Image 1 (tube, rainbow, N blue to C red):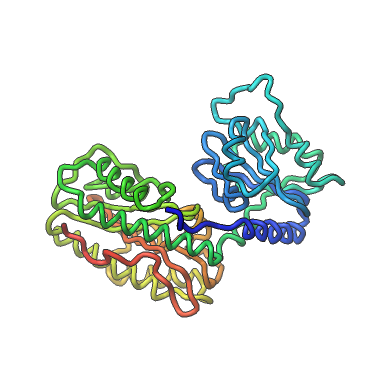
Image 2: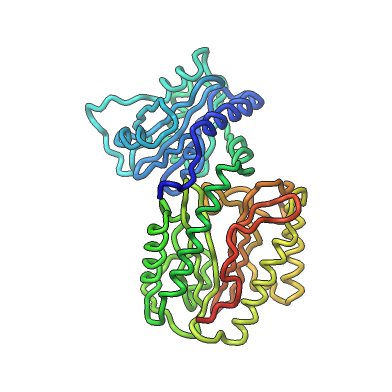
Amino acid sequence: MANTPSIPRAEFVQRWSTLQQRMAAQDLDVLVAHGDEADPANVRYLSDYWPLFETGGVALGRGGDPVLLIGPESLTFARARSKVREIRRILQYRESAEPDYPGVALDTFAEVFRALAPAGAKRIGIAGLSVMPVTLYQAILKDAGGAAVARADDLLVEMRQVKSENELACAREAFRISEVATADVLKKMKPGMTEQEVVGLAQAAMYANGAEYEGHPTYVLSGVNSTHAIGRPSPKALVPGEMIQLNIGALAGGYSSSVGRPVCFGRMPSEMRRLVEIGLEAHYQTMAFMKAGVPARDVVLKFEDFIRSKGCEQYLLYGPCHAIGLMEVERPWMETSSEYLLQENMTFQVDTFLYTEEFGLRWENGVRVTRDGVEMLSDKFMEVLEL
């Protein structure tokens, strides 16, 4: 898949420069961005490196190039992947089994901070604190040399929420692959297969069509399992007449996707079909509410008003959108507490999830915000799916 979109190094260099300007505005001398295998977004955004087993970080001073921070075992892998050329190994980025690595020469945060702020750092920011291990945070505090340590997630959130043309190309490819995989699953899945077997079909189709990984754990949740807003597939067999919640998402160039559809073998029971149709209508209504300049809160309030008008507010857990990019779920969410305005080239998952005690359904598509509305990044199989 030689033509798979990717982010060129020049765009990473621009990201470093923009972040340094933001650091200066907040009087930060050093910023440490953290990531791990499950949530690599900040580290991948700044370096294209995606840690596994170990964790990873990118440290940046007010000027010059950043430093990639890795664990003791990842050096050759990091050299092969990273757009950041200087790489340092630090013990606290090791895997959770906490080996000691006797005899291995490693760097320290103190050495990194001196290199990035030779005159001494007075303020150090951390992005990704919500997923940073306590052991790593304690090591930063110990080596901070008296500098104040502050949370700095917003610097990167603001940069990441409006996508570049290269990012959008990666996102469109990820959604293309997800739709191909969804089509393959709808063609091949049969009653009697287990949820886990169908996940295998989806994974095979994604990788065969260019995915670098799954954008999120694949959802194949049937019967009462479909009530799970967050869930994992089980050995349960698929049964005609039951709801099957499909959410299939590929990763391409680091950017995530997800295509969510409610599916049933045979005709849906009347109440199930009614809620599926209401969910689909609400899904389209949400997209109709969205365009650049609209307050995010207004989209939520209108969505909730629509759900109430159908008498379905008791089936609502959350809604109706969350941002998508390097993670399938990332900031900002759209909630009644959201104060921001939608901007052109922000990308969201329109995620319409309704559930009863017996079943749940989810319509989910990616969209790009435009001046006049949205561009749907996935739009296939937008009908009641009775196989």
